[in-house]
Amino acid sequence: MIELRDVVYCRLGTTDLAGAEWYAVNILGLEVAERRKGAVYFKSDARAHTLCYFEGDPTDQMTAFEIGTAQDLHTAGATLEALGHDVYYGTRAECEARMVREFIRFRDPTGNVIEFVLRPETTGLDYHGSRNAGITGFSHVGLCSSDLARDEHFWTSVCNARVSDRIGDAPLMRLGTIHHSIALFPFHRAGIQHINHQVGSTDDIQRSFHFVRENQVNITFGPGAHPTSSAEFLYFTGPEGMTFEYSTGVREIHDEPAWRDRQFHFEPKGFCHWGSAPQIAAFKK
Ligand SMILES: O=C/C=C/C(C(=O)O)=C(/O)C(=O)O
Ligand SMILES: [Fe+2]
Picture 1 (tube, rainbow, N blue to C red):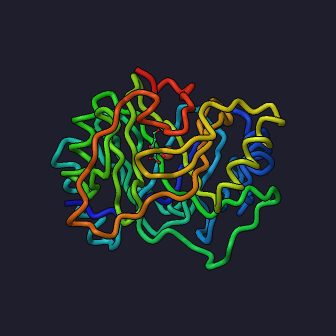
Picture 2 (picture 1 turned 135 degrees about the horizontal axis):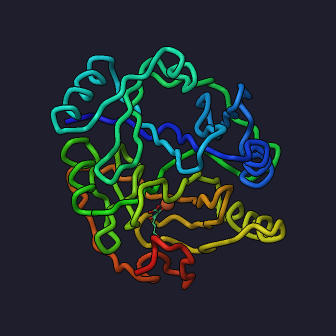
C-alpha cells in the first residue's frame, strides 16, 4: 500500500505566463513565492509553494502527493512498475524545479499525470496575498476520471485513500482527517478538474463572489454549500479554463474506523443544498 500524506502542489502549463500570474495574484489571491525562468511559483499557506504555472502546453498538468520516506518512494515506484505504469524518476534539476528532495512521476489509470514527492519544502511562514481573499491554504484537487470505479480502486487499493462520500459514482477521498484531498469526477479526458483553496469564513466566500463577478470572472457554481463535506463554496474559471474553488468549513473525519461513506445524488441537490446548480461539465449528467 502506497502511503500518501497529503496533496502538495499542482503544476499547470500556460501559453500566457504573465496573464496567469496576474490572475493568480489579483483574482485568486495567491502570493508570488518565486519567479524563475519560464515559471512562477505561488504560496497559499506555509508551504514553499502549492501552485506553479510554467510556460508550456495548457494540457500539461501535474498533481503531487507527499510520501514519507525515500524507502517508501522507491517501494512506490516498484509497486507502480509492477502494475504496468511507466515510472519516471525526477532528475536533480527537476527536483529543484519542484522544491522537493526526490520525486517519481507516472500516469494514473485515466492518464492524469501524478507526482509522488519526498520532503517538499516549507517556509514556516504564513503567506500574504495582496488581495485579501482569506485563503488559509491549498486543500484538494478534483481529477478527471474516464472510469470512476477503476480509478477509485487505484487510489484506495494501490494507495491509502479512503472514500469519505460519493456523489453518484464520483468518490471524495481522504488521505488524512480532511474530508477529501482527492475527488474524481467523470470526464472524457485526463486533467485537473478543479483546484480548491480553503478560505477562512462565509464572509470570504461572499466577498469573493462579488469581487470575482465585478472583475468579469465567470462564476460556474455557487455560492453554495456541499452536503458532502458541509463546506460553503464558490467555483469560478481561471486561466486556460481551469476551475478554481474556494471553500470554507470542510468536514474533518476523526472517527476514522467508525466513518461510513455516504451516497449522494449526482444531480444539483447532491452538489449543493442551498439550491445553486453547477455550470461545470464534470458535475452534470
Ligand atoms: O459538488 C461536489 C463537490 C463536493 C465537494 C465537497 O464536498 O466539498 C468538493 O469540494 C469536491 O468534491 O471537490
Ligand atoms: Fe472541491
